[in-house]
Length: 489
Image 1 (spheres, rainbow, N blue to C red):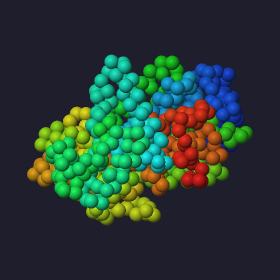
Image 2: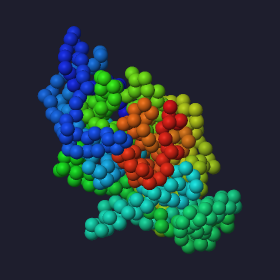
Image 3: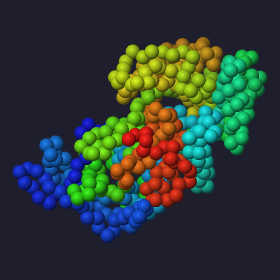
Image 4: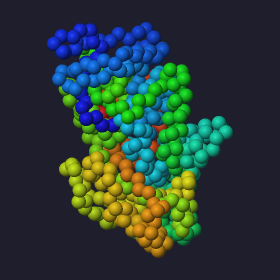
């Protein structure tokens, strides 16, 4: 989530006015609020304080309307899948009260634009993300089972489909790599097999299969509809509002951190419309996390650089496209390395990133819960632009046609009425790992960002890590590889 005028400011609880300048004192939380006991955050009862509208001026900045003042144990900035699942984990795993703040609406970033893969086939056993991926995969399966236990259909509620996944190679070198990958995945306890060309053709008759073709096949992989899943989690979170433990503040960007005058401790956030006090703050703002933290800490002595960059992606969705039927979800080997044999140069560039702005297009294909064909995908660095680039859509269609010849019979121009394009800005980290942890020097401020295209698949494990950190509980998995220290400061 982004902010145009964000800064660290003192606690907006005025005790005097002199020459138009407001003085502040540290707000005293009532005995019914949460307290840190050692390293644990313990909640008692939510307190909400509503004040009359009052315009205050802060050191020459534009007036802030303090029309609503509320207090929560935890404030989460960002209502994508990461922010919503962190809220869920805190609500079901503790007695804490939680507020979710979002500059726009839920799933307006990368979450709502993804394909919904919860796949292990592109993951690498033994890598620093492996434990997190495995834990998240298990937690998603547990969530789907809990939906069934409630007498609901995960397909209807979550868009859940156990499609299995195919990582497709077309050269002898790629086939050798797939064999090694399958061996590692099998040794890690997953059902995995390497399909030769004839077996691959049996699984996917529509696929162009040559003599050197093959695939890594994980029959237990599944996918979700990100929009449906986020809506389900949001609805479940709202049940806690009846108990005074949950609230949402959408279309309400954060403008500054609230700090006590005596200790400079962060005690909440100021938004464009509300003052929200809290004992812990989680920044889960996706691609906007870096710029947001930069703005919030501009006048602080905390040195922090969260190098999360937006990596733009296009997906092509063809509604009710009957000519091509798929049995599984597919991606080409090049997707794993975020590259394709054909590298294209972009013509628009708003920010000069060191790692270049080359566009890559890799084939991914699946049928969603409604039977729509979803094709991807592209990657490029063009700042925060979310405009549709028709040339990229054409490249996605052409690349898909190289794998599925039947698509070559259909000019994309003839499908304009049934097609949709999704644009998402993936939160990219240079080392390929998310940032999950507390900010050095601000022990009650936590980051959860940088998942790039794995936000949905890693969300539940991330939520568990963050909740354990906030509560001071021992973690289920090792989160040291994702620490803020050494990577952002």
